[in-house]
Image 1: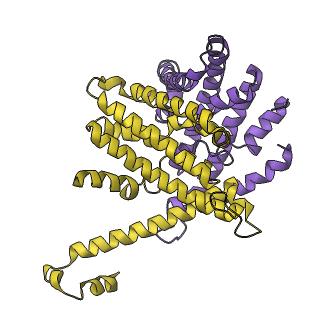
Image 2: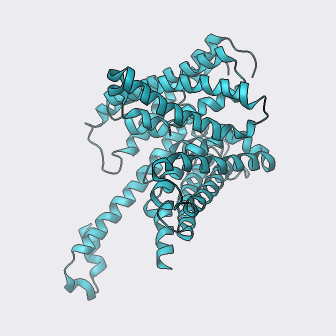
Image 3: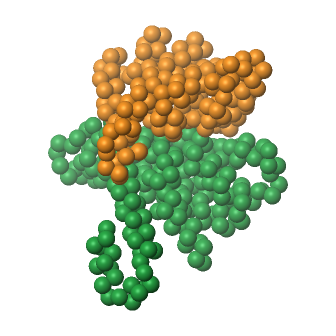
Length: 195
Length: 223
């Protein structure tokens, strides 16, 4: 991948390559918690927090430990262990230091371990060979994109609950079709940077 | 023998992980742009699922209960690494088109869910069958989606010659994935609802109906 400015990375990770609607990552949590606006907000805050932390830690570990020791083949095991232990640490830390925030994010934190969006960001920064600054910009942009998609979608879903629908379409059927329309509108951003 | 068949049918149809349980959606949508990718992803995930089920079931008695989840994850990650390197070595094209989704098999909820719900409680052979069944269910769902999307989006099936000249390209782009998946899931739910209704009617029939020749007609009318 050629050199792209930081602003380019930021905007493209929010809109052009939106992690949910364009890359199909983090769909389980997207469909799971987007039925209420408040739970969508809580989940996206937890994702924002852990995604940035996980991206930076895995970048440091990959470039300063795994690469010098020629252990790249261990990256899948190392990254997933980093993320799950990081989630545990964050949980403990928050419980002691920020009990108010812990109460708000509480149940969403453990769910993050199996959120593929977090792990995918760790793999993507390795694939794209970003430096540390680009990593931070990319992960925060991706987290904002996640937040944007899940919050917009939960607002639509709250309205969908009231719509009169045939039995078979109710639930996941209509949710998928709605996200198809949303994804279609995000495709409009593709021309923005030419990649 | 009956139990084996039960486990298989449950995985592939009754509790199809993707279409009915709604887990493992990311690879289901992302790796189904062509039927070839879908087959590759389906086989890779089935392989990891079956192997991890067998290994976890083998060591289920020595895993301490409190740290079982990290152990499951390490087992799954090991097999995912093996698959990742195998595909890179023997199918470089497939590895390029599936990209980041091969390492992401490790967070595929189906595998962890089966390890927790089945393999850690059942013997090796049943766990193996369960891996094949659940993997088969995932394979079936993703290949169906892949064939439909490739047919509508590029007009071919498994890269054969084009059946029509102006395909709807949107079907192989992300929105088409959501759309086709939504339709497939709706159809599945329709059939499921209908089957449930039929079995409810049958179980409510009076015993005198058992030998009646008009039984099937009666049921049809009640539907």
